[in-house]
Length: 169
Image (cartoon, helix red, strand yellow):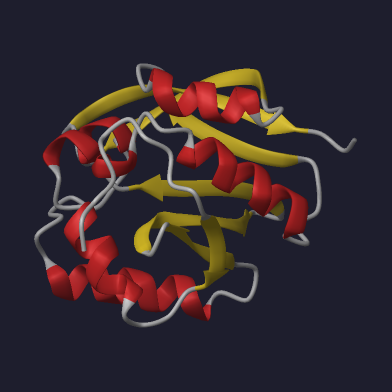
């Protein structure tokens, strides 16, 4: 299947329940070193398929997780998910690098927030130098409420991050 040109927006974007076959696309996407650098807080060794599968098994068994696969056109572009961390709902998403810069993440996150039954306020975190992801969150109504730092495995060092919140409407 031909991929759309890099800066075109696919005519259709859907969110659907994740299926096992999606893991192949997710694994291939997270092998991209630039994508890992931007995400920062990822697995230490993205090429370790066994650790990748174990990570996804834990996610899928967590009863607080709401997980949707992002399908752009007919291709798995990434995922968007919410989960609870110490009782606080938090949002996370991943978009394969081939889909960056086309508004897909913003459209997918907005659609997820409209349809998912995640209670609010919802927290998000983003590496401070990941300006694209920060813009996505802000376009969807998240506001910066604080800063933190943590060890980013993909970078092998402490990395500053913004904490953002989306409050009830």
